[in-house]
Length: 561
Image (cartoon, rainbow, N blue to C red; front, side, top):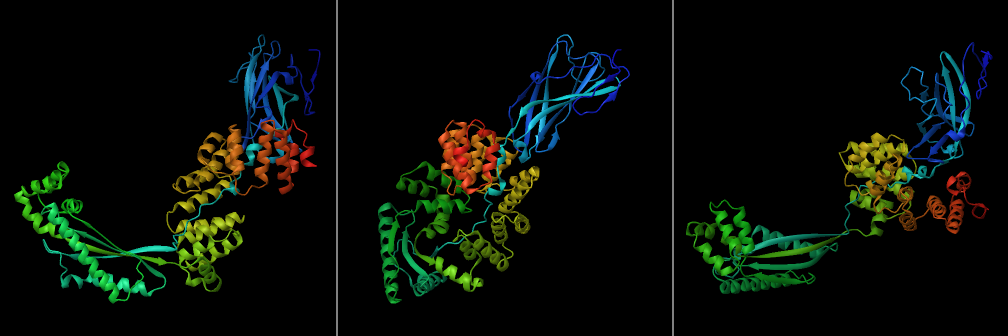
């Protein structure tokens, strides 16, 4: 052979070759195309495909080439999985490139995203093996830069799940007692006024009247007659029972000097077929199914009564066990218990929070938009009620919003230890999502079904997995930067614009995403206006915008100067 040395190009390393035969020529950038070009962040990775089209008469038959995709950025280099292909005379299992015809190959590429990659070059490095000799060919640049819009997905902005309080300003309580009547009678017997239920009802009415925090909203009387005896008779009986019971209550209220009771209302039911059916269904009467079938077959009340009386074998049981229970007046007192006002709750928190119930102190935290104050209130709640998982969960929520993720994790874990509740599971999943532990996050989200905030968390999870379509479905109608980002990545620009416009408290990222929308829809005015506002709120976005390939075709001087 005429040449004794093969010069190692690209890395500047020379290898002595005693005999290397015909050497492979240099690869040209024209042989390669990249999809996508420029590269693009998907989830937390930068994946791509490099298509190699090797011309005829190029690939030496005894050569094996190992291609290593390398991303070069900011003085750093990271490599993707090497890929090898070989000539026709090489014994191996790699794809073969014909010398006479050339060939095509697809080289998979993937890098774990780093922010500095936005300004980068995708290079291909080549190591050629011929027999027992190796040499390096010059690297070839095949793409410039990375579009990193997907990297704006931010788990830190997801709202953690709150374990809500059950505080009610007004709680309605009902107290009831029945006055029973004899068959075909409407007079109130003295013994019926002294039953335990009637004594307790009267006691509650008097107590509510004397308590300024309790209001008698209504006293209602419902009177009934059993369905035997005919419609005309039963109507008169039920009506008289209603009148007598209402007269009694009117006199009793006057006697007890109760004048504020909302309204005294009354009504009657002439034939209580509904009550009859319910009692029969609950009874142990042998032929109850037959009775119930009669009720379903006949709707006319008189025909129903005739058919049931014809069941002579069971009517006696009905007369003894069921019908007497349907001859009554029910007196119901509706009492509204008025809870503490917002001002009273906040005053007690300031002076003596131990006088607040757990519901009241959790509610107190919802009366402020100051997360620092919320944090202090939830901290007090956890101290006073350490066995209620909600106090720890909501403390962790405030810590998460404050950016104290270690403390938040500890609080969520404490909440989770107090029972298998969905909110702490979702919030622990958020911590794992934030730390890049995606499998663990997904497991925890699976244990948080029914939590209102879960859609936002799952949406970011899917964005981090690179599944923007699934993220869109998870977000639903959520109005957030993350939801709009998913819509941008699925190219639903109109929906993304609506979502961003509906965000209650837009921040720098909101305006930056709107600027990206302006670039993608060729609306330069929209781009400049929103990018200017984004940079005003967060000056670090100016440098990002300069390197952002979303804006590569625009002069940003109007927005940044």
